[in-house]
Image (cartoon, rainbow, N blue to C red):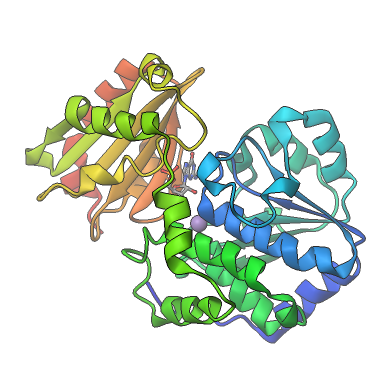
Length: 344
Ligand code: 5GP
Ligand code: MN
C-alpha cells in the first residue's frame, strides 16, 4: 500500500479551471454511504461552499446516525427521500464530483440520473479499475488509504489549500480513520500518518472523533453484533473461511437502521486461521454481500467473478439476486476455489 502516482500539476490546473467555470456543483457519494465517501464529499463541500458558488452535496440514501456529527451533514440532500428535486439539481449542475466510487452503478438508485449528466464529471477515488471513459478528469489512486486522504493531497496542491479548516480536517480525518479500520489496514504508507498528523494540527480531538464513530451505537446494534457472532457465524477451517448471514426478519427484530451492519464482517477475520470472511444481508429483492480478506487473498476478484461486485484486494462488496439460502449455497460451492484461484 504505497507508491501512489504523483498528482501532476496539469491535473491540478484542470481541477481548478473546471471549478472556476462552474456556478453550480453537485458532489455525489456512493450508495449506503460509509465514512470515506461521506468524509471526502463533505470536506469538498465545506471547501467549495466558501467560493460562493451553489454547491449540492448528495447521498443516494440515508446515512448512519453515528456519522451525523460530521461537519456538513445537515446540508446533505438524500435522493431516495426527494428524487425529483435532487434529480433536477444534479442535471442542472455545471460540474459533478464523484467521490469514492469507480462506476456510476455504485450510486444505486441515482445511477440513471448520473448517466444522464451532460456536464463534466470529476472522479476522486481509490478503488481499482475505474470506469475511465465515464469521467472527464480522474484522480484515481488505488494505492491510497482512502479517497479522503487523496482529496487532502489534491486540496493542498491547489489554490484551495488555505480554505482547509477544522471542519474540513475533521471530515477528511474520519474518512481516513474509517477506511483504515482505525489505522489497522491500508495504511502502510507513511504518508497516511503524515497526512493524519497535519489534520490533527487543525485542532482535532482524536479521542472525541473515535468515540463519536465507534462508541456511539444503539443498544440494538451492539446486540445484533453479539447475535451474529454467537448464533450466525459459520466457519470452514479447511477453506480458511467464515461467514455470517442475516435475514430481513433478523434485521427487523434488532430494529435495523442505516449503517447497522457496518463492521460486522471484520469479526470473521478476527479468527485465527481465517483468511476469508463474508457477511450476507438480505435486502428487499437482493442479498448484499461484504467480503474481507487477509494478506494476498484477492476478494476484489472473487466479488467481480461471482457476485457482481468489486472493491479492493482485501475489502470488497457484491450482490446476489438469488434467495438468501441459494446465495449461501452458491458461496459454499465456491469456497474450494479460494485456495486454487484467489491467492495472488
Ligand atoms: P462494504 O463491504 O463495506 O460495503 O464494501 C467494501 C468495499 O467494496 C468498499 O470499498 C466498497 O466501495 C466496495 N463495494 C461494496 N459493494 C460493492 C458492489 O456492489 N460493487 C462494487 N464494485 N464494489 C462494492
Ligand atoms: Mn473509500
